[in-house]
Amino acid sequence: MPKILVTGGAGYIGSITAHLLARRGYGVVVVDDLSRGHQHNIGSLPFEKLNVVDTPALVGLLSLEHVDAVVHFAAYLSVGESVAKPELYFSNNVGGTLSLLNAMAKAQVKHLVFSSSAAVYGTQELPSIPEDAPFAPVSPYGETKLMVENVLRSLDRYSGLRSIALRYFNACGSDPESGLGEEHEPETHLIPLLLKAVVTGNPITIFGDDYDTQDGTCIRDYVHVADLAEAHLLALEKLLGGGASDAFNVGTGVGHSVLQVLRAIEEVTGRTVPYEMGPRRAGDPAVLVANSDKLQRVLGWKPRFADLVDIVETAWQFEKNKGKREYPK
Ligand code: UFG
Image (cartoon, rainbow, N blue to C red; front, side, top):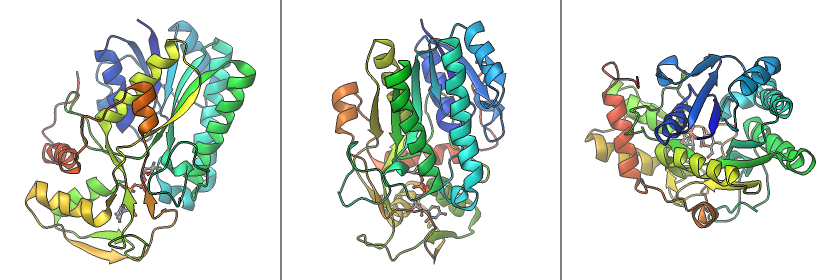
C-alpha cells in the first residue's frame, strides 16, 4: 500500500484523517510541531516532531520513508487571529507550505492533498457556492489558502505536481471510530464554545445579529469531521490512480444560522445555552454554504452525517467524555 505523509497530523482533522488512512491499510507517517496539535491524537502512528519550515528535515523524511503522497494540514486556522496577526499567518501557512513543496520537489514526491478553505470565497451572492465562484477572501487566513492554491496551479503546470485542494466549510463533531474530536487551545469555534457555555453556565457571545440573513446571525455549512476525513481518502485515491489536479468544496450543501446551531445544542443536551449578543467579528462573511455536487459526482463522496442534530450529538459525546477519554493506542 502507498505511504502517506500527514503534516499537522496531531491536529483535529489531521489526526482523524491519519487514523482513517491507517485503518484503510495505508502506510502513514505523521509530522507535527505540536505547537497547536496534541501528541495524544497521534497514538502509535509513526511520528516525527518537526515544523514544515524545516525543508532539509522534510526531504530526509520523504526519502527515507519512500513517501508516495502528502496530505498537508499543518497550518493556523483561526480567522479572527489572522486578522490580528496577518504576518504570522502568511509566514506559517504560506511559508510552511512553500517549504514543504520544495522538499517534495527535491524528494520527487508528486502527489498532494491540500487543506484549503471556504474562506477563499468570502461573501457571495449565490445561495450556495460552486468551485468556480470568484475568489474574494475577506481575511488573511483566506488569503493564505488562496495563495497556496495559486502556487499549486502553477506547480501542476511547470513541475508536474498533481494536487487536490479540499475547500472545507465548517468542520465539526467527533469521530466515532478513533474517538477523537475538537480540542483547540484557545477554542474559537462555535459548536465547542456552545457546549462549553452549557457545561460552565458562562454565556457565549454571538458575533452579530444584524447580518442580512433570516435571523440576522451568520449562516455556515457544518460538515462532520469523519465525512471530511473520507473526502481526503477519496482525493488521495484519485491522485494515486493518475487523476488530474483539481479543487473541491467539502460541505453538506445545507446552511444553518448561529441561532439554529444553538437550538440544535439545546435539543441534544436538553439544557438551555446561556448567550449574549455582541458585535460582528472581523473577517466573518454573512453566508458560506457549499455546493458540493462536484465532490459527490467526481469523487463519489456522500456525507454519513447529513443532519445537524446528529453532528452535534457526536460533539456532545466528546465533550461529556472529557477527562475520562481513551485516546487511540
Ligand atoms: N461564532 C459566534 N460566537 C463564537 C464563535 C463563533 O457567534 O464565540 C459564530 C461566528 O461569527 C460564525 C459562526 O459562529 O458566524 C462559525 O464560527 P467558527 O469560528 O466556528 O467558524 P468560521 O466560520 O469562522 O470558520 C470556519 C473555519 C475556517 C474556515 C471557515 C469556512 O475555522 O477555517 O469555517 O467556513 F475558513
